[in-house]
Amino acid sequence: MTTVILKPDEPVEVALRRFRRAIERTGLIPELRARTAFEKPTTERKRKKAAAVARLRKQIKRSLPPKKRY
Image (cartoon, rainbow, N blue to C red; front, side):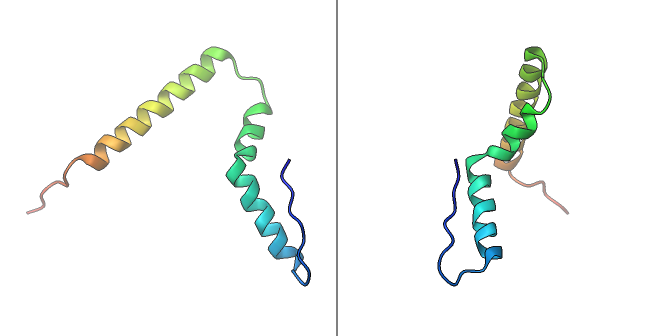
């Protein structure tokens, strides 16, 4: 469980910002969104495979030298 202790003379907005950052670091929000509705195992595998392919394409695209513009 993520907790944020309010420091003396600290505005609530700053503590809220720290809390949001801590939640983002743990990856809780994407997991909650994924668990809101049931996803069939085949659909989950297909989605993860497509994400892996996209990551690989992106990595290859970054490693290639830029095209020459004349």
